Image 1 (cartoon, chains in turn red, orange):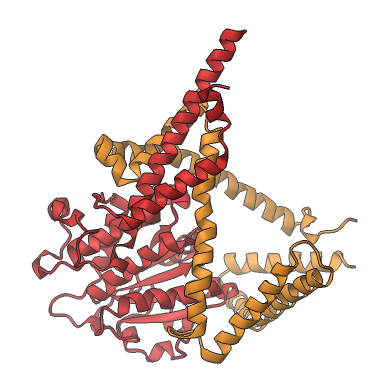
Image 2 (image 1 turned 60 degrees about the vertical axis):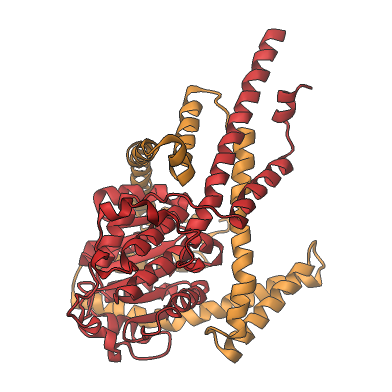
Length: 322
Length: 208
């Protein structure tokens, strides 16, 4: 048996081993790599950023808010959690009103975890004033709540995760329905965002954005093209892009540079996030993960090429032998 | 009777909900509100049913010592302890429930999902062959998209790879996805009509 025939019959455990090493090494020894932002991520960032109160405006007075819907369990957290953290960080940094909610019980602790992860860096952010966690709502009631929020959020949701009457919370000042809570971001490893497109978007004109795992991203392109989805974070790459946008603009130490600008984005100094000690680990998780994903993709491509070379050589030899 | 009654419930309620959606009248709205109150009351019973089901299934597995019955003990203990931790100490940050979530459920869930990378790598090596023109196009598209999705690909081949990736996703991918979505949508309408009219009865299960 020659080398190529052996390669054709390579035990899959060797492949597993190579993939494991290819993923683990970049995580242990992270390196800086350029994060290229794409249009669907930028659109989402710019829309959320437009909800920030002006310099002379009180955050509580603002009549725009974001709803983050967590529709996933722990298994898809490596891809989706960095997105959620990045968006929460953006909202807390820019004092944008944000609501969180889920219709699946296993996502309830993820919401708490995401909020606490970001909130500990923003001591001035208060529950009920800057954000509210609506908590877990029974899946069977998803549709009436989605439709109900189009009329009156406080009535549809009734109480938050802490058992408080939503209508009594200061954050609800100037926020009544989808006219104000104007962006719904659904995070899932499925096409769960479709419900928001069908009901909140079609009936009430709410903007819908999705954060999905990379394998689901291809399904969302028809909705992106029609504008039914305003923007999309696709897998770890989308999360890394959003992390970078928050670093470059929302968290920019110079307040004059917090508006989105393509010129600032091109500055290579923003590509040293991995070695930049000023950026905390939790705010660059996706970019660290992208190193591993880079190497894993290259490994898979190399495997495909080796497999095909072996296939064609074996086929050629078989042809020659008769 | 065992088949006729469920069939009648499905058909009657099906038409009532169609009526609610297409007839914006106070009567249909009142019906929907009334139904929702029932839904709120019924949902907790679904949880009870789930707990009963999982307990009975795994108790039976332990009793009959079916292969890997030991895992059923772990499942039952995990269910009881997690529920107890949630009820006893709450579910907020710093509680045993949150500790379990962060240190048990999260890493285990992520581990299961991460297996996908290993299977994709193995499957692409073993099965992804340029056996035909169609397979070659698929293979090339996959390689370009994989390169376009990671920074290293852009560093190696320039930003042009990003544009090609976006074109693949925005044109051929979008066209096929839309075709599939339309097919699924039409299929759903057809199946719904068959159920409403009582033609489709396989969901009732069992034989005649």
